[in-house]
Length: 507
Image (cartoon, rainbow, N blue to C red; front, side):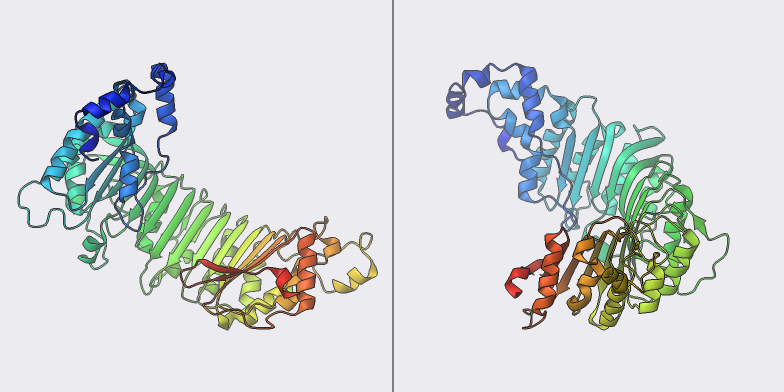
């Protein structure tokens, strides 16, 4: 929000305005307002890596001001269209007092022009903003403007320091009802401020001044080192989507107990105690969760020993530890209708992996992240898939097909459609085509509907010579020609694809 769009028009601007096309100048205000609305940026969320708005995003936010700088007609139309002013951004990132004072003036008019519509609020700050400043800075005056519309907040995206969060919520409590309902709330804080706490969760004191009021979000994204998940100032009853970082296992379990409508949950760097005795009081069954993603940290792998999710359909698990036994027990206890599974585990064994997958017969999409030490496990899984493509009916296949699948069974992943391998390993392409079945049976009823086989090989080196023989390539191309999607991508350390194999080059 710069000063430029609010300055008086120059003679050159006035003269230019008279040159506008009569068609544009004579458009009805209602039509002009709808055109303005159509050009509003869709996504103004703060980039998670920066916790502040880069220059190009600030330019998009100032779009309503730019409209008003074109001509008097456009200014009147923009100023009288509340829907253009429903996204309010406060920039507290290392700004001088003059900038903040000007921003406050713009914010006051911005809030007024939003009328009575729900508003989305964005606040960005870094730890240097209030450093060595004993008096309330001009930035707090900008936050006070947000209080004027606190009863209309819809989406709240906050990346400030604790001091600003305390001030924002304590002042907002003066005009909001006991519970403020939000569609979405994101709360993190600048990296420098996190470091001062050593990665430990905040004590929750930032909310003491707002103890008589609570937030009731439908979606919540929160850094546990910024605001504890067990805070009394959060009403979990309407929560459907949760994304949390640096929470403890007990904080997560507490939310599960108080969020009956939770549908999707993504946890990063989840931590837990070194040793815990599982009791019936500590165990939680949640019947609504359908998506669960957990990135384990410390000994949080025990979290799956404390939960049962009978309706889970999408599960992602990332752990550097051996959690095969805990996962197996979790799968057996929940008996969920899982259709999507993404595993990145510290270790695998052929027996444990195949046994685990055998518990999810409805699985349609499987992603496995592996290491070079897991090559034998990959080979065993491919072989097992090859011999369990599905039991053919003798009336539909010839003798050669029967001999090919003479060891097959009906039970292993009968609905699998997509199989993805990621990591640093050599993939057994010479036997991979068998997992997809014979080209003549591809896509036919009664056979596993595996249509996609994708390998993302992480490597900085070029593919070695003779990494695949021509006969294998020919079989893979034949399968591709009947509808299979077979891809081999080389991925760099930055996880970006650096090379895509064209199978015809290896014939």
